Length: 123
Image (cartoon, rainbow, N blue to C red):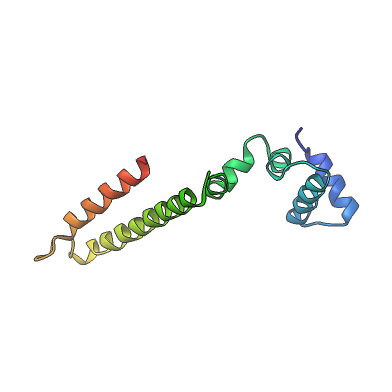
């Protein structure tokens, strides 16, 4: 079942709302109160597979078979984000001419960080 624009407009008129987020919230709340699961309600409103797509890692973590796996997945995501920030910081040294400085050749460090990011994305 897919909620149509016409149906959303009817809900907006019924509740006297012009804010689409308020309309979306009212529809989701009503569907869940009628016994439809949150993910199914979200998919009805935004299309098949939308819940998993929009929720991304949050959905995956919520479905983790145990808390330890969820913590590992969060740690993995946080470490990947930290590596990406680190790489950005290293590369920002380029305009100052510091990427090739001695005694620390930052380009070598950047290559190591890029390699770590690539490995993390593959796992």
